[in-house]
Length: 167
Image (tube, rainbow, N blue to C red; front, side, top):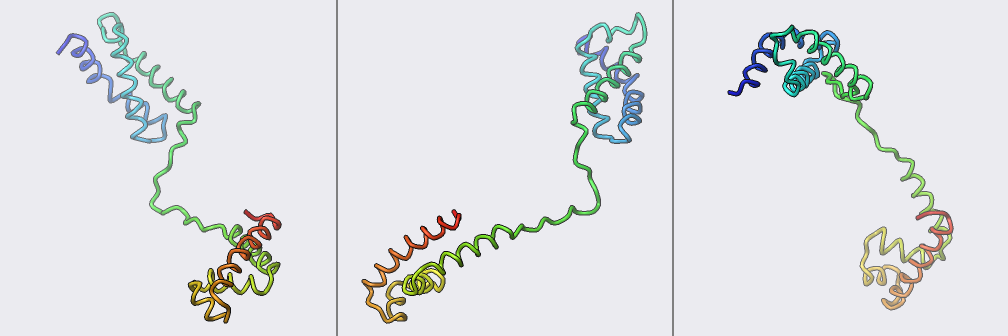
């Protein structure tokens, strides 16, 4: 152990309890934050060799001043806005359904602008999930016509959605 380490150990043993109690009193009993202040205070003492040598005078006033300044700096910096631990869970967020309602309105209006043939092919293939072959059988239209109507219906639907200000 070096001489500086020995001096720091002696300084810590003699003053750490008092500095911790002081920090706790200024930080409303927040043990974790007070311990951080004590640690930083003694780290600064280690970096300041004149403080380690207590032969000239006591280092306690210096340690208390450093601790107080650290607490003030933390207070001013906004780092004090930590999450608070509570016994109760936070409120459960609920989904905002505004966008869904707006989207539904745009889709309904866009579908109403389509011809009956285009609307029926989109409802059959996209909403009911029918294959093109199944849609052709249900609607009584040849498969090629279903393919063609689906293609043009999608383009007409996209144009109607864009015209209504949708995405």
